[in-house]
Amino acid sequence: MELQDAETYVRRVTQRLSTRDALAWLSEERAVSQPIDLPNLLASLLAIEDQSPVTDVQGLAGRVIRQVCRAEVVSELDPSQELLALDEVLRPAQYRAALDTLAARTATRTLGSVTLAAVIAAQQDDRNVVTALCAAAGLSYRDLRARVRGTSVPTDLRGKWKNDQLKAVFDVIDAVITGRVTASSPAAQPARPVEHLLPEVDDEPGRQRGWELVEQMRAHGVPYELLLTQRAVGSAWVAHRSSTGKKVQAAVTTSLCELLDERPVPYHRLAMDGASRELLTRVGANPTAAAEDGRNEGGQLAVLVHSATVTHAVAVSVARDGGTARKSGARLGTLPARLGIACSVVLVGPGWAERNTTAELARPFNGRIYTERTVAELADALNAMVAQGGAVIPTQENDDAQPAELSDDPLEVRP
Image (cartoon, rainbow, N blue to C red; front, side, top):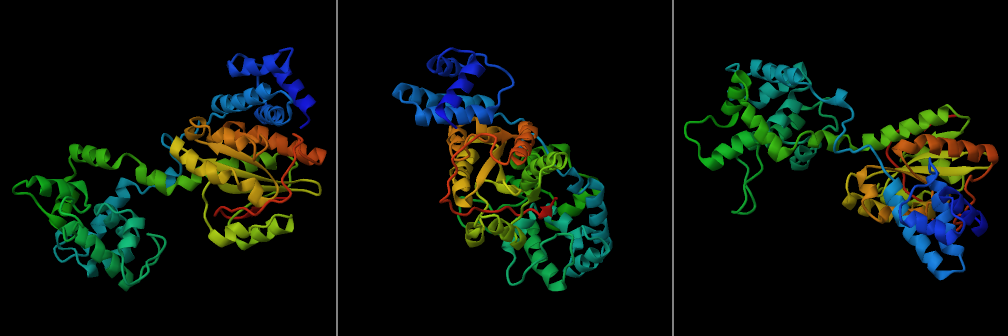
């Protein structure tokens, strides 16, 4: 963007007569013409910071960039307060059915006499049995798999199990339930469910232990105060949010794709697979970095817009707090240079408005910063790029860039 165009735009949105007054107006966070075209405003401020012959104007423009990002890059989607994929949550009735199925396969028809043979038979009857046992032991499936030794286990808890795999996981679960796990330090306690661990620590007399305690709660219910204690030490929905973290990015990407479908924008939804790497290579980007380290730090390269005259990528990054934004921003800021083509970014989560990290992304992305609230504006901008045969905001892209990383969502191709 030329300096004259940048100064004209900043004066227009602030309705000031001079560039210095316009920047001062913005720095004081006074009212400006609404709605703000954030990418255009950031691109203008970057041009002023780079090209102004007046040193203090350059410095003022840099400060305003940080203020504008904190004020305008506001995401209303907070992964800590909103839930996705509730249809994937196993319902209480399903846990009850799985445990009842397991009890029916034991010699005493209770969970007090659970054996490996009973687990094998019950899992064939109800594919949720292992899931229920994981929950009974207070183990996420990721934690369970990390503890299993000597054999691989299915990637899907509800998938098909071999007998040796069931033996491996039951050995781990049984050790937790019966208290045969140890801590590495005398000052620590081995992690076990609160209903097993706290009574042991408090040395409560006359209580049931191990599988007998599991059976007691299955048959007679769990006290509400125990549920509250579990919630206090484990937080509500924390495991579900962790397991569905990537779905936030996927949901935002899907929203963008649906908007692009409504416009004549040729695009591909990207994934970390051979088809996406081949596509990026074909359009002039070299995705070697993704193939070399496979990491997904910083964000998800989600969409590639490609026509005879336009090649443009869109990344999506989620940060629920400032720490996540800082960690993600460091790598995300190198994405356009590593990829080697023009990029936009969609920032999701409250973390992006908390730190100067967001302002540091303005330069590598040439001001093209959006949130889930403004994906429609991004779709319009991409549509205009394709229609006009180039960038809507004139920029100087890095021709010596290196490749970027890819995400791990399924590849979807659109016309």
